[in-house]
Image (cartoon, rainbow, N blue to C red; front, side, top):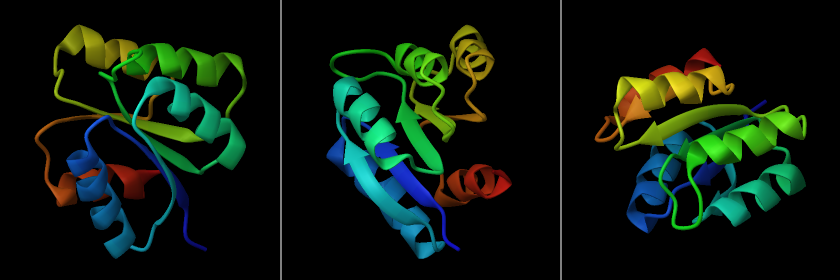
Amino acid sequence: MSKNVLVVDDSLYMRTVIKDALEQAGYRIVGQAANGEEAIDLAFELQPDIITLDNILPDMIGTDILKVYTEEGLLSKVIMISAVGQESVIQEGLSLGAKAYIVKPFTSEQLLAEVDKL
């Protein structure tokens, strides 16, 4: 059974890159969000298996979204994807429950390696 994925990134280009890579690998993209509010609403509405979460969104940051997911008991596995590669930010994301943290730019292979681990 293919896994359902929610893609969260404010860049349409990045969402498309992630979507195309995952779909080619057999994952099903069930939703896309361009901001934090959509990311939260869609996550609880769709209950995806996996969420790829950008850390810098127009209305909030990914780690704050992660806190909401955790507090509300969302079971989706989250992979953070961000241009912010500072160790402190990566550690915060992982401590808040992200299963992986991918720094942009990344290759499709890197993305799939992390997603496949889940």
